[in-house]
Length: 511
Image (cartoon, rainbow, N blue to C red; front, side):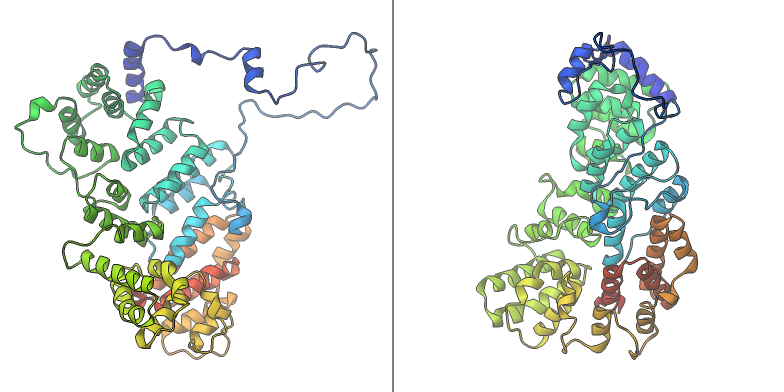
């Protein structure tokens, strides 16, 4: 509150009087901007030629609404009719419990679990609680979770739908997305006209400088620094950004122990960029820009693809952008994928059979096998592959979105075919994990506390808890695996549990 008050004071000193565009609209202006609204006729003024009579003696219905009450909003990017989840996903839960749960959500190991998490976060839903404050808390929690996994584009779309200038909290969240994705100039332009939204005086100073208003930037910085509102690594980096000539011969700044989007962007601006490989996943998006070298772009794209935050085609585009100039590590993966794609273009069964297994193995080594399967399964269906390439092609098909094509293929092993069909009775298993997969298709094994939670209007909360349980199961806990699959099946999430079961069976990191 102190920082915001300071921001108001400095803004008044610098900006002067507000512009005319902030004045309330006249009735004429309102009609011009709302041409589809009905004209103001007899509903406001009596018709002098109409006799003063009423058509009946019944009292018309009166709508009563408390002053200041806000209309609940539906926020999301995908209609509930498409995802199959209800719009009331969160309504029975308290905002705090959901915010805490999303904050503690681990990085999910199973791609099917991560995909369901995105579906839950992006479905058009009402917020929790009973008022608009709950809606806002949940929207910001959804945005923060998406950003944590590197999914900046849907996070930005959610914020734009909710209103990035709705209040200071929404704008602060938008500013973080903008700083990490290279859109800070757009955010700063908004801040220039609505300075009361500034997350801090440091942000206000940075944006003033980005807009070319260096005196105002210096005023914000000096005021904030004098009053203790801008301190520590942020103050050091911002001072060098504002006065680079004073630090030409100075040693580079020490790496800060805690990083923020503003501090990350300031270090880049003063010529001391931080490598994103050691930073949280949200910062990897910054390396997708053309400012970064090809290797940095590739490494960032791989990290983001593992969580499903980057489209598969964009990763492929980076893999094939140019010829690798070195060997080892990521360059070997690039070379393997390029050789395989070249073989596909030749349409040679022999060339594809030779290049597919090495490419598959290279992608498995970094958890990108599912991405590879989604990219190339359809293309491989046209060719008669030999030996190990045929087995790889079948595994890719089972892991792809079109896995159900093989539901009646007799060459598919019995256990896998039972999962594909969802008919798991009388299936023999050899390990506790296989037994858990089979038992997971029986909804009698569902967690009763989670199914009760879903019945009481807390479906979203129950799904989040089941996803954490599923992650424990993927780590090797058969009981958790059985309960998670059974619970999710009781919610009608059939595609999720079948894909999750296949991934546990087929992906090497779970074998």
